[in-house]
Image (cartoon, rainbow, N blue to C red; front, side, top):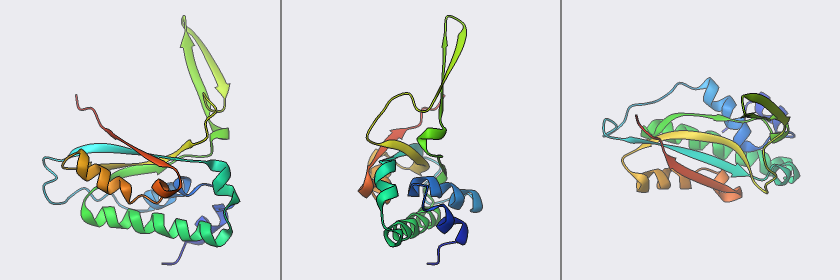
Length: 154
C-alpha cells in the first residue's frame, strides 16, 4: 500500500493516531453489515506516548501509518466502522472550566500523563466481546492502549 504524500509530510510531527483523521476524512462512512440493526456502538479511544512516536525512525513510522490505513479499510469492509478522528498533539489543547459561573481556560491538557489521547474510532459491534476484538487490531494497541467504552443511548 502506498502512503499518500500528505501523510508522509506530517509523520515528523504527528502520532499515527493523529493521521487517522486524514484517512477518515477522505473516506466514506460504511455503516452497513451483518446484524447491524441490533449492534451497539463503542468508542475506541487510542492512547499513545507522543514523545515515543517522535523518536521512531521514519521507516517504522511509515510502516505503522500503512497499518492504520489498512485497519481503517478492513473495518469499513466488515461493517464495523461508524466514524473516527485523530487529534492534534496535546500542546494544541485548551482546557475549559466553569466555576461559580466564571469561565477559565488553560493552554494544554488538564493533566500530565505518560500516554495521551491521540484519536478514536467509533465502531458498531454486536457486543463488548466483538468490540474488544475489533479494537485489538488497532495498531495503536501495540504502541499504547485502546480503551473501549459503550456509547450511552438515550
